[in-house]
Image (cartoon, rainbow over all chains, first blue to last red; front, side):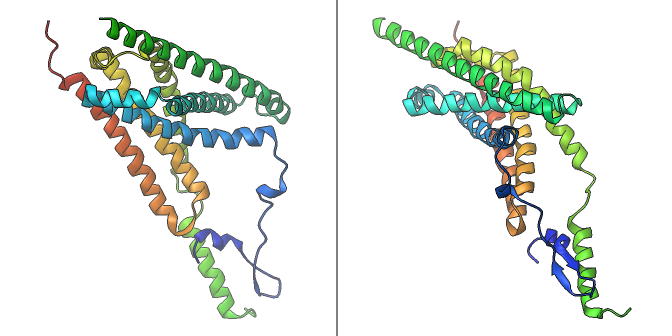
Length: 157
Length: 139
């Protein structure tokens, strides 16, 4: 027995012979619904946000190490691929935060009926898309512009 | 009484398996609360961090290092790092519980704890070095 959970699948027929009881319907028999997609994506964005935070710690470590490693870290964050990763991190965080806020509402016993869930799903998607894109765009633009101005000022001096 | 003994013994063993690995471990509620509390903690801390990044993004080393060295910023950063990786640990553990079965389960849980723990400590040490480790700037 590889998994103790297998024990739950052992059943016996009325004649005493042992059988493996059937599993309940699994993922593949369900039609993908928005609530299902949002639930799964909340986990995926949680993992993505963790990966991004790991990179954030790498950034903090580079800052603590000194000017040279900080300059290397800035090369990564200023790179187009780095900018895409940063945007992905920000959007994952927004996504996971919106999902988490919905969980708080459900934990309080509110908006947990089927009708309400289906009403709130599209709203959540709108909030994620709006806040995520605006926040990522604004943050990357502000940072990029400031970095540009700083490097110009340094060259001029 | 009439049923063959050996088969009943098999059923008995399944029951033991059930008792060993299934049912409430009486630690689920605490885990659930830890997930919620750390999430609630992260809301203001991440909000603070986003505002700081708007003020700081694109700045040069000197400004950023000075920012990280201020006591209030270092405190907020430490709190942010700790609650982030605590929340990540609690959340990733649930994912491992749900999807990683069999022999890989225990190593996967160790990997989650070790990975998030080390990253959290690394972040805290980096912040402490920024706050305490730099020589005082020349006036």
